[in-house]
Image (cartoon, rainbow, N blue to C red; front, side, top):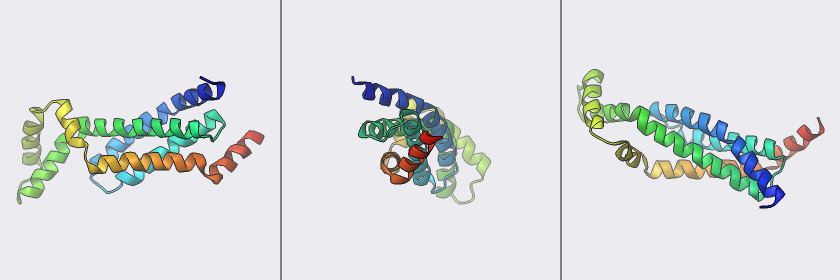
Length: 162
């Protein structure tokens, strides 16, 4: 591996912290049931890319690949944490939508019964759907555009002169 490639790998490892924190935050965003998941995915990609670029002090394609991979790892971590932390809430919301007049307490108790019989692998497989693929795509696009954008390149050059 070349010296530049080694530097890109080390810089990518520095991006693991924002990816992990972003994954946890993404799990909370998914718990809200809002439509912020694609924007949060792109934001996670941007933040990971900025950290990787700042450590690597470069903007090459190896940095794009490293930032994209770290961003994707953060998204997958967020989806898995969502499956672990929020499955009962998701099922309770579905039950309340299907049965008019079902209150939150009853729906949560029924959801715990349903989810309690599932393994983590089953929960994770249920979480992977088209929206998850779109989230992965948006994170990779956010990371790639950030690393290759002129704005962040200028910020990198300005920070080098300070």
